[in-house]
Image (cartoon, rainbow, N blue to C red; front, side):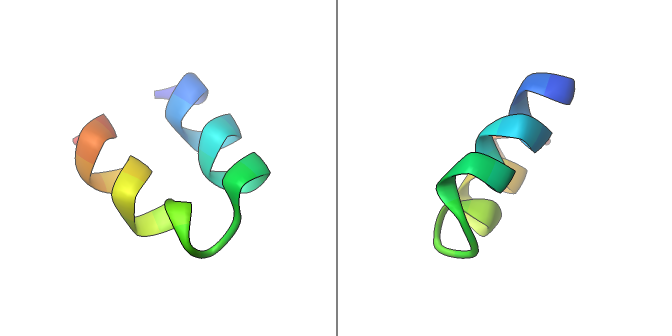
Length: 24
């Protein structure tokens, strides 16, 4: 969960939704 959050923040708004789906 933390890994996904960090990855989303590092990636940006573009990767945010993608990481969210993967984390889910």
